Image (cartoon, rainbow, N blue to C red):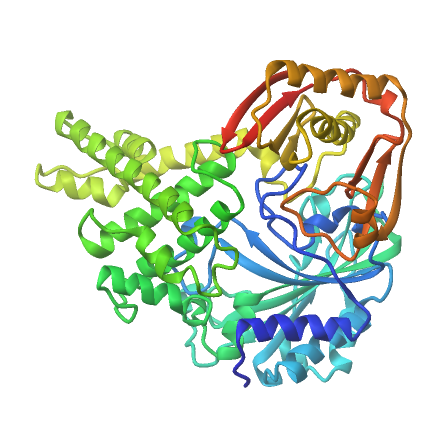
Length: 588
C-alpha cells in the first residue's frame, strides 16, 4: 500500500493519462453555464456530452480531467462512512479512439502499479445482459487476460449507462452501453447479514467500495426497440478522488482521509465532541461534508435563497446548524469559526476575502435560529400535535421530528411517525415533479429556441460592452425555451436608456443577418484576437471561438444558429441589481 497526499494522487492521475497522449480538460464551473436542465455539475462527463454525441473536441480524441462535483440525491444518507454531497471526480475519455481492451488494461495498471493497490483486494463487475442486449463478454475476456480470477468478476444486470437509465427506458436514438466497475475490498470489515447472506461488490454493508467505473458507449436504440452498434465507440471513465484515497489508506471511512481530517478537527475544537465517540460521529461527518459543500457553492457565487442552487445552499447550512446544536447542546455555536480554521487547508481551494464566506454563513445561521424561535412559539399554542403538523414545523421552521417529539414528551403525547413520513414522501414527490427538468444530469436543452437564445447572449455580451464600457464581463447565464437570463459585472450602474440601447443594438445585428462561424485555435491566439470569455470558466489550451460577423467573438462550445436572422427579435423585459456591481437582465 502507498501513502500519498491528494495532490499527489491528482498529479499521478494526470501524468498517467498524459503519457498516453491525453489532453487535460479544465474543470467546468460548479454552477453550469447555459444549462437550465441541471442545478450543478455532477460529473466530469457533463461538459463533454456534446462530444460524446459526435461533436469534435478542440483538444482531440483523448481527454482527461479532475472535476469538482455536487450531488444532493443522497443528502439524507450523509453521515455514514462513504456518502458525501461534494466530491472530486477523476475522469478520462476516448472519443472514437481506443476501447475496452486499452481502457481496462490501463486503469488496472494505474491502480496496481502506479498506486500499488493489492490485486487481491480488487474486484470487478460487468454487464450481465438482458432480453434486449448480450452480456459484455468482451470485458470479461479482457479482465481474464489481465489475470483476474473468476471469483473476482461479478455480473450484474444494472452495469449499464445511458442518460435515460436502463435499456428498456431509453428512447429511440439514445446512445448507451455497458459499464465495468472496479471495487476495493476492506477485508477488515465484517459482513453484516442484514444486507444478505453473502457479501459481494454491490452489497451495502461497507466491505466493498466502488473506486472507478468505465462506461463503454457502443449502442444506439432504434425505432423498433432493438439496438445497433454505434459507428464511433466512446469511453467515459469516472472515479472518486475521496474513494481512491480511502482505498489507499485501507480505511473504509472516507472521513478519516487527509481531505476531511482538518475539518473534523476544527469541528471537534468548536464543539468539544470527539470523532471517536460513535454517538456523535454521524453528526460530525454531516457538518464536515455540508460545510465543505456550502463553502464551495458560496465560492461559486451562490447565496442562500428559497430557490434552485440557493435553496440547496440554505439546506446544507441549516442541516449543519442543526447538527451543531446537537453536538454542542447550545445555540451560540459558530459555523463560521470552523470555516476560518480550515480556509487555508487544501479542502478549500478558492479562498474569498476573509469576511465574505464567514458573513454569509453567519447570516444564514442567524435566520435559522430565528425560525426555530418562531416555531417554538407556535408549538406553545398548539393543543395537540399530529404527523402533519410535525412535518409543517420541519418544512417551515427546520424542526427535525426528533426535536418536536422531545418537546411533546412532557405532555404525554407521541407523534404518528408514519403520518410524518407520508407527508415527507408527498412533499418529496411534488418537489421531484416540479423540478424534474433540473435534475437530468446535464442533458442540456438544445431545442431551436434555446439555441437562438444562446446565440443571442453573445450579442448581448458585446452590446453591453459597447454601451457600458470595457469593464463589463459575463458572470453567468441561464436559458430555457421561454426566456434567457444574463448576469454581468459592471463598475457603472446601467440606466434604463442604456439597457434600451443594448436591445436596439442586438436587434439591429439580428436584422443584419450576420453569419455565425467558429474556428479552433489556441487559447492564447483566441485572447489575442479579442475573443471574450466567461469569467468563471477555465478553458483548455485549444478552444472553439465563435464569430458573429465582424461584431462578436467569444470562446464557447455551442450550440449556435448559423445566421443571426434565425434568432428573431429580442426584448429585454426586466433587469435588476443582484449584488455589488452585479446585474441581471431577462429577455425573450
